[in-house]
Image (cartoon, rainbow, N blue to C red; front, side, top):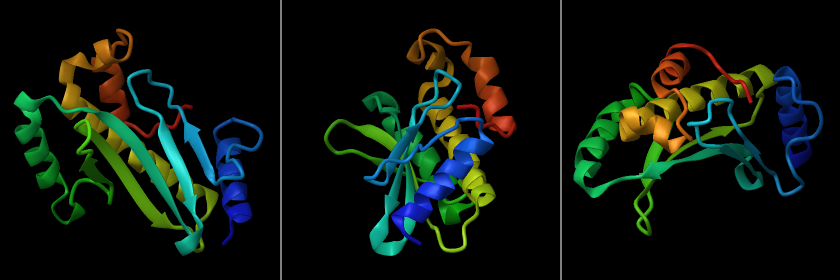
Length: 161
């Protein structure tokens, strides 16, 4: 697969979601903004060297007083990827920013497969945001109704962008 094929996949996914036109730039990158205002944007990058794609999202800054508990829970969830569908978490040493990422091969991938991966990634990002911010999600997203929105995201398929 090449960048042009990755762009075709992303254009097909965008069509499925009701967003016409090219979405991936010539640099192999694009950003998807989800409908829920408390959800961070999902950055999508095509990696030519191994014909893969990477989803990446910033979850938020970990506060020192809750850091150990949050990291412990994230590590338990990632034990053999038992609860994360392959999504991994990392922490920036510069500013304590917690991130989520998921890398996967594009070999024989369809638009439906891409949508499936994006849905799984978005669900895991939602879970991580809820873990980090709990009831403070609303403040983080300009006072959105976090409890109802968060429950809907975690329990249902969603890809409103």
